[in-house]
Length: 382
Image: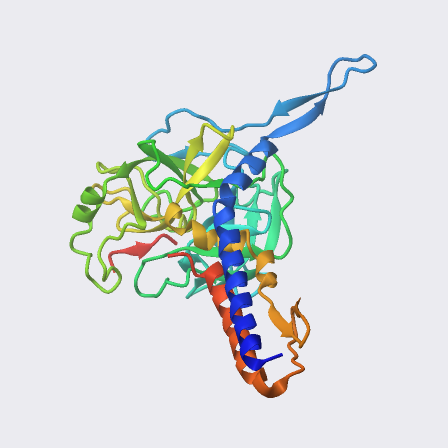
């Protein structure tokens, strides 16, 4: 084949593959919404009919444990399975000595959404373990499941000491056993959810001066705080080394301006959530607990990482991991072009170096299109 025609063939194939990859992503860019509907069905279970007769059949019953009543000041204990997506993250340099310091949210069978600063603790080592299906850290309840952590991925734009893009994903060593009491939450797709209030959950401290985190899962109802009001409460912190760009749109502010309700140390990485009308009995994760000033004090709302700003990045890891293997290296010969995952050969060696370089470039572009679409008085909440 003429070298110029061969070169042109590579360019055309590169363009088609890149176009196909991007089209594929756009087609499933809101994969989380489809998975939300799927996971929502887990609240229902099939139960044998209590009628003692032949052919009585079975019934589909709801196992919903969400309590849609106002929460008292300061928060209260959560009921079993009321927050079936809630996870707690353990840290340690070995599995025999684990400290449970952060929260997280189940978003699929293999992934937990948390804060980037919850992936490793300066004092306690890396995140090594996850527990789900519990409302008390010391009791192994019926729904208890425990998994080891095999991969910790922080958002690529998270750079200490700044507190921007404080989002991380944890991959478990094997899938969770999903049921009505242990199931993923949905990811918020609205930049500004319609409700005026949200619910925060966690095993953190119940007061700023408490000596240790709480053993029980607590819930508290908080108000959305406007950007203007939040900036006012953080006016002396904006522009400093941990907030050099000021208050960005990827922040979400929540709390009670008058004080009395808040998240605190030990709640980091946990969900800020709202109850969805559909799917039934399902939460949507609006924010991830990041940092704040004084817990539950007047004019001290906490700042959360806004989940809707990072859906592309979350989906690129959580739902598209298998698709990354389709970013192939191409094998060319004088008669045809075929895909192979691990090798490259060329009968006409005259232009092999150029073609190899273009092929690797194509691979890099394809991968980049998949995975790069995401975008001290102040203390983290662990």
